Amino acid sequence: MVVQAKKPRLEFYRHLMTELTEDKDGLETRLSKIKTPTQVIWGQNDQIIDVSGVDILKKDLKTLKRVDILQECGHTIPLDKPGEAVEVLRKFMNY
Image 1 (cartoon, helix red, strand yellow):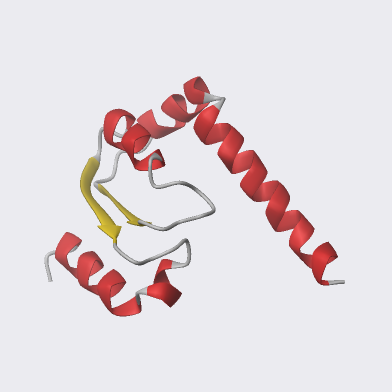
Image 2 (spheres, rainbow, N blue to C red):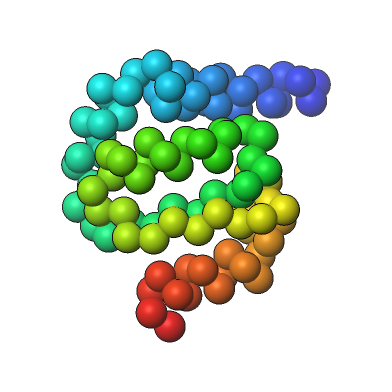
């Protein structure tokens, strides 16, 4: 039963990884549509989407204003490092 519940999420992540790695042109097109100043917060130890994905965003996301890579943090940033997540969000929003 647990495996069946996780199956849709696994498909989502598989599709996301394909988008990030294989369909680069599609990702570039979508990134170019973002017009709002953007922040990326990534966990250094993310085992779902490798932190190296931030390099693609740095290159192709023209509205990227801030990148925060949190140490000793995985994919679930609000659970792994809630205080640091709030801190970097506040810095981005100038609070």
